[in-house]
Image 1 (tube, helix red, strand yellow):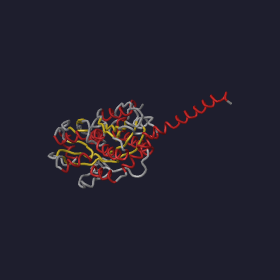
Image 2 (cartoon, rainbow, N blue to C red):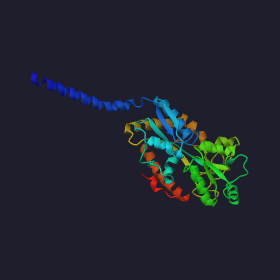
Image 3 (tube, helix red, strand yellow):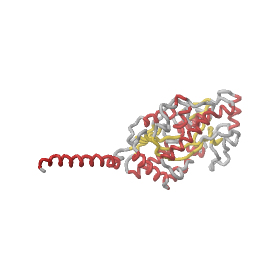
Image 4 (cartoon, one colour):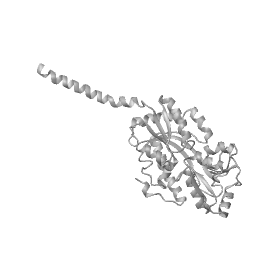
Length: 335
């Protein structure tokens, strides 16, 4: 018996070691997060993805008990920020606050990633709002017809601000030009906030901005909304028609915001973030904070799979929008 004792002890030690290794993975998952999480917003502060992103980050931070830092990385219509997250370590500490531009870009720009296949879905944050066509509060334009008439009488005179090339406002300008047979010059800025400010300052004659950015400026008389690029009129502005109502069917540019992670992020990390995201967006405090922005929290199931299915449908819709705008999807944009 004594001759076998060392082997027995060795076998026991191996068993203990194996048990320790097996316990390590769940233990590591349980320690997540053990440091601050960064939410990357790929546009300037004040825009469609920035404001809801900051609100949901604050709500999730309360529930998780760890800091969530919101970092703006604008550039190339959102491609700079999205690329940073795509290339980040898949450890759950770098998350992209994605929006409609992330789906649109592949149809207009040669992006290095697939916005659906090359990210790990977490869930949706908000639905809406629609784009609104605004002009300066002192502008002579009272309707889209006025804009079109002036653009035809004075070719290339008018300029509209956008939140960046290939974003929803950019596509809306292109679509308006194509449908009306006019040439309004696009002036891209690094986000919806700066684009709206350009209309207020008179740097441009108008622009398509999201309702969440236009509402306060319109209430203060700094801008005048003249059309809604969405499926229906807005309750706060019952007299402002939709683009479809004035003879442009299919002119619908409504946004969304979601959260995605780098590829190959562990399922347990995604499950953790999805749970706290849903706890946040279903809370009364979150819904009260987003209500003035003209956006709503997602209803029903909000799993990573649900969000992926939504993005696939949105991608197909954006492909059709690209055709309406006179563009075709770029092969170079597909990895």
